[in-house]
Amino acid sequence: MTTADAAHPLFATALAELGLSVPVRRFPDATRTAAQAAEAIGCELSQIVKSLIFAADGVPVLVLMDGASRVDTERVRAELGAAGVRRADAAVVREATGYAIGGVPPFGHVTRMTVLADRGLLDHGEVWAAAGDPHTVFPIAPKDLVAHAGARVADVSEVCEPGV
Image 1 (cartoon, helix red, strand yellow):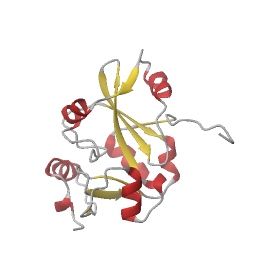
Image 2 (cartoon, one colour):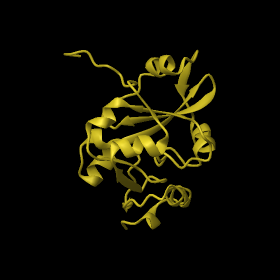
Image 3 (cartoon, rainbow, N blue to C red):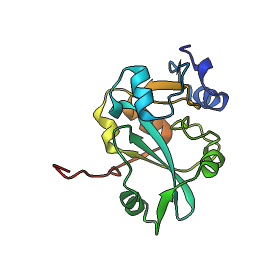
Image 4 (cartoon, rainbow, N blue to C red):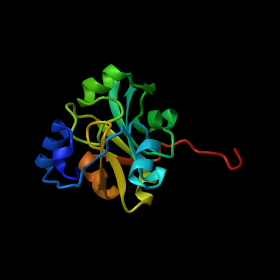
């Protein structure tokens, strides 16, 4: 299926409220990981958007990261001016977003929260994100992703040393 009808109902409502029409693709096998999604779509791993929930001083924060990179929690902490940042557990993710891990979209959550989008996402003309469950994805231009998510662009990916 390639219409917004394939999206999770909560996410479909968010799309309608934003006046956004995106082609949602549904896959028979789950695409819970960035690697699974990239393989199913036929795109580069870095074109997959991971929507990751962290707790900054106990408050949920969404970080949008490309599928080939990892979040540097110290950089997130510094960007937010928080005392501590840690990965949120599954219960916090569902409570804050309305979705289960593996299907969290970049916007359309039940709770409004701070959103950071890693600058590396802007290196692509198109990226793919979850549409509310582990079987659905949709394409979007990175600048539109940032705008609709209400994200602040930041450098929050781990920096790899050459040769490491």
